[in-house]
Length: 307
Ligand code: BTN
Image (spheres, rainbow, N blue to C red):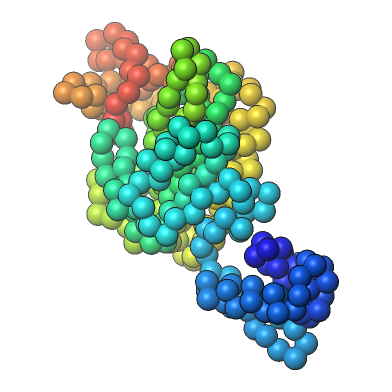
């Protein structure tokens, strides 16, 4: 109901009378008024006048009804430990493909390799449950598709010079803008589900981390609407996943990457490797060439651009 009322108010771009809302939605005018009151309490600036209602401003909160066509598959939490854990539990209980868990803040946001992901208000933090019908061997490509999709959206939709650092970080001018963490569960040789967690520094205060972080607000000099960003990403990613062009994923990732051809340092557990990042193979592994010319295939690790 909230989605329908907001849609009417937004489509009108002006004042809509209570009787029009009531007739269009088939509810009483008292019920309309109650819904308006509840939207106002949630931070929607809806002005009520003699001629009807006008939506003056919406809060940038990721309520499920703000995603028409997806509302039943969006779980929005004001605060949680980590959206990864909530999404995994929902996936284990059989939630539908492309269920999204968003949180305004996370108290235990996590990154790759057991790092902390600082998740204060104003950032975009979400985990998506995907159930692609693919063998386990193809699963890394889902993350590469997600990061390539997000980098393309940041470039084409926001004019941000987003670059991909292997495997799936998004950097701008050497500073981290987005991080991606994916976890998978399998049934025999096939993927049961993948949870893809993405954190984007949008309007949040930046943590003091190394490498340094940046945000969309810092880069663009204005606040960015997170709902619009998430909605556009979900549309584009869902389209990419359903296209199923798995051979095209790494080439798409290469288009925006900033790692290849550069000297890098890789920290993988206790091991530290140095060399030139030569390429990424079809499975997303990094091909590293050491100073003596030997090559190593790296499947996980922290990559630092060394020059
Ligand atoms: C990284 O760069 O190491 C990955 C960071 C991933 C952060 C996101 S925020 C939403 C989701 N929930 C988490 O706890 N982590 C991911």
